[in-house]
Image 1 (cartoon, rainbow, N blue to C red):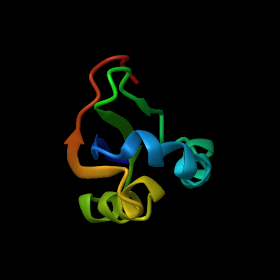
Image 2: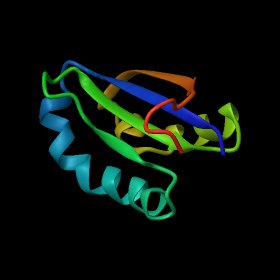
Image 3: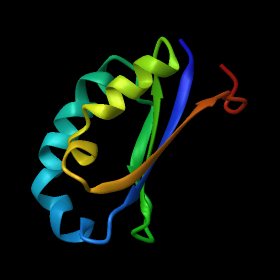
Length: 92
């Protein structure tokens, strides 16, 4: 299944909103992670946003997953970049 990298750029007010929506955000990602479709995800330690690596059938499918994320829906991210990704290391 193809990989995609999502970079969510935090909105100016995200620091206050993030804790409120974090449980729903994690609930959104948990079943994908359990199915092996999110091998890596987390916030940048400089407060700039977050990164999610996810497996999806297509770019459209990846956008659908990202579009349902509570951090997207509730404006924690003011911009989202989504790119197809080719994993080189570790080799699989």
